[in-house]
Length: 273
Image (tube, rainbow, N blue to C red; front, side, top):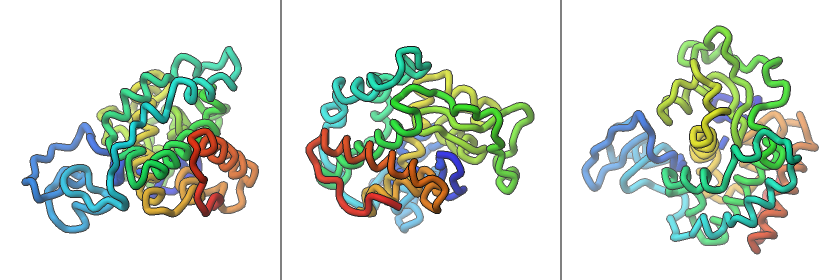
């Protein structure tokens, strides 16, 4: 999720549904049945309210919701199979758990439930492909050597000021990065991302929530619209797609292909960005 653009993130990003990130701590909508609640907490009927940033109500989704059983797709065998490929002394072991993941997705009813059941499986495979790559099989909670890197985007300081002695390097399943991503995630999820970015690496629930928030805000919409796995790579890490790291792109594609195989679904087109 590093080196993402502001339109994104976690870069990357990401998709709650952008369709997405449904329940947010700052949201306070009480719309009429025929109105949509925007991510800013306002009611209306136009695309600004019912489109990409719709949170509740008759949202104009890129694909209809289905009744996919995410817990039945992300089985213990699947989740633990990823963890098993990490070293036994990894800090992420015990921090990233299936139970926490399943608890968090209750707040994201659109995740893995758009389009056909095969579409759901592909989205879940895509999410875990990026998580596997970013954390090295749930091994790392924080970016390696992250403290040595500058993730303060000066152009975004007006809205997301970088706090002295705070670092905004990658943390969590999607390795949330940059001041604007921490600020926006915190605002939506109910924590102070700018003054307390460390919580993403210490609170299991907050950590997974930032990953789902990023996915739903930055990734889900494009993927649910049929743009393929390649579009998710660009959302998560645009730099890789622009020739910065072809090996990383191949790694993500390999994980995605493997997880689609495990779920028994074809990968679909547009695998690379």
